[in-house]
Length: 387
Image 1 (tube, helix red, strand yellow):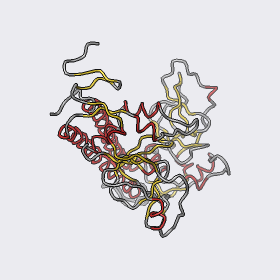
Image 2 (cartoon, one colour; image 1 turned 90 degrees about the vertical axis):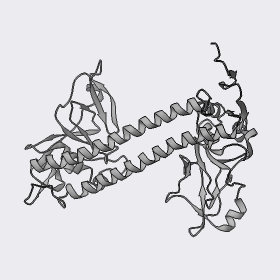
Image 3 (cartoon, rainbow, N blue to C red; image 1 turned 60 degrees about the vertical axis):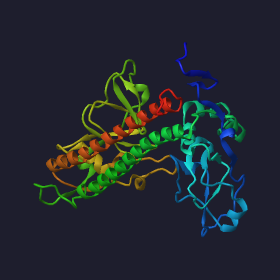
Image 4 (tube, rainbow, N blue to C red; image 1 turned 180 degrees about the horizontal axis):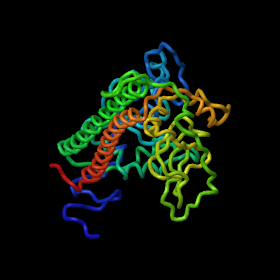
């Protein structure tokens, strides 16, 4: 293939003639990893013990499970990390990245630190470490037969393309940072909408808040008065050749069938395994024998009952000591307060509109992520120049 004027072929691909290929060792002042061992934990400690699973999308994420250590342990095990540091997961999950922002922490062995040369844009390197070329070099150098481990030698030898000037480096990083800010805003909006929907479910599905035009007391009824819980069928009974109907299990769709087991709106709930994740179907489907489906009675609304199922703590009805299990008669014996079908339908419509809004935002987020990936490929290889 003929090279475009102003570009050159390198061992990691085609880049502009004025760009260089640099190893990570050449663009850092120090590369290391965390403590190879277990520190002395302290419930009253001031410092978090951080491993690779605490590093995610540019941040250090602390959970309730994150251990604490004392100041004495920090002094004993601290690493030379500073404002130039990028942290990276190197065991199990490979290549998750986060900036060090002076958090009080001690690093564990599944986290590496890369101190970036101050003459080079740290933000540019953050994005360069996420490219397909860089990730492939990491994968090619993994050790460990069960859990992958990314060694420091592999990190040091990994090569990335580098724009010649700080101005161009900064321009690329700024463009990609703007995309990250957009994604972060979408994530926060989606979280807000999900929380609003959860609050609406708690109010509308229990009768604490009524929609305009509806009044009268809700009745307490057994689920068995509203629907019949039915067993799915064994997979051996499924005709799967040229199937068009989804075959559903507790975790979602696992294949397609050439005929449907049931073709009306239905609430589905796990019989074995994942028993606490109800599903809803309004198109023909087949379920396997680990997943119950339901047949509605007396014009009750399937979507309303699906949302109501989502509020039930199903694990309290678990009937097995090993793999969680539900019994159809147990499900039918559960009592809930419920309105007439007309109000059920109105409530379901409100919640379905909220679901549609969340789905649209999630689709927009996915599209934005795809755009960002395309920008990274263009900008970080010099295919598109900003200066």
